[in-house]
Length: 218
Image 1 (cartoon, rainbow, N blue to C red):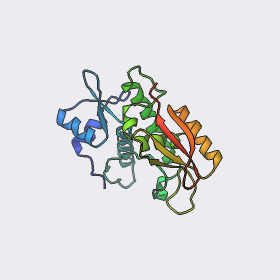
Image 2: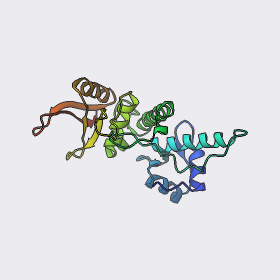
Image 3: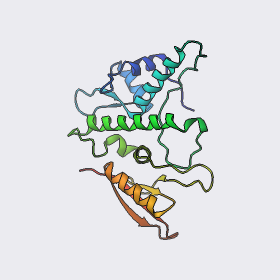
Image 4: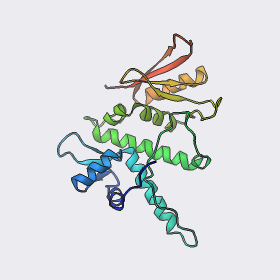
């Protein structure tokens, strides 16, 4: 279970620059957010800290919770447990309450945060290819690109069709499985448009087709 954010961490996230996500705080506070995946340290001087896509989502959830508690005649919502966004790789159980328009907004916000992260960390400020964070979180990054484009992840129950993103023995690539050829082809097109190199391959043992994708570097 994700540990709740401390009051100091919530204040730090809330005070981040609304445009860039730049954070200000003590070295210990910023390091704690980095360890939780909510912030990253810029590799170039002055090595400022910025919110990751998960950090942006945590701030949005925090703001929404505060807005709900301020509504008159409404019961107060429980304190935020972090609000960390998780891309769906397919096959994980999903509570019914997490579906629908609210999820669509979450995914859209996370993808915008990812593009901002690319702009801030790629040396040429490019947003058309993956950044360092995506290269170290391959499954989450590829799954976010697919879900943000409207693809449906597979459900947890047997027979629930949709994409599934999985790790591979290759350190810089993920495998994407889909229920049929048109869906597989659509996943390739989405990943390529999102800055990934993607191609279709055949598993030798099962003869099933799948996509092998890796972040494009140039």
